[in-house]
Image 1 (cartoon, one colour):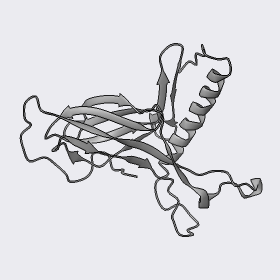
Image 2 (tube, one colour):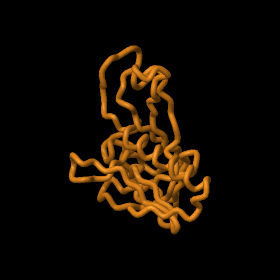
Image 3 (cartoon, rainbow, N blue to C red):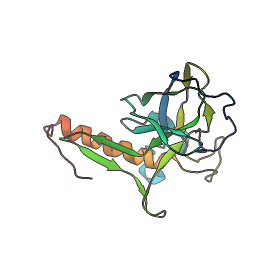
Length: 185
């Protein structure tokens, strides 16, 4: 993943140009660890695959003061696009949340070990110094490559995998007679 919200060392040296904007776009994805075809084996870490984080909120945030400069939502392919001021040091934040207007839902994956904080995935900081900037984010499973047998990093993908499973269930219900489905937060 491209983690490290607010961290990094790519600050801007120029003064923002008045009325000049930049498009920040990319894809938000997460690593899904599927179940083994043999249920007694549990998860199959040899079959990890990237999947899009669908319909999740994405913010472009000022690294200097944590102010949200632009907000958008990923599409069904995890793609997002936002417009912000040029020559600003920012980072991209994807939230483990999905919501839809009425009739609809508002689902969040919260960290009960951290005051029920919403799980987020942050990019490193970067300067909005060109017309179009691509920033892809991938929530990592934390599982090492090449035959490792223990977690080696933050399991950032888990909240997004949980969220996507709920999103799939909601879509199934809606497509099977629940068009007016309304789920409270």
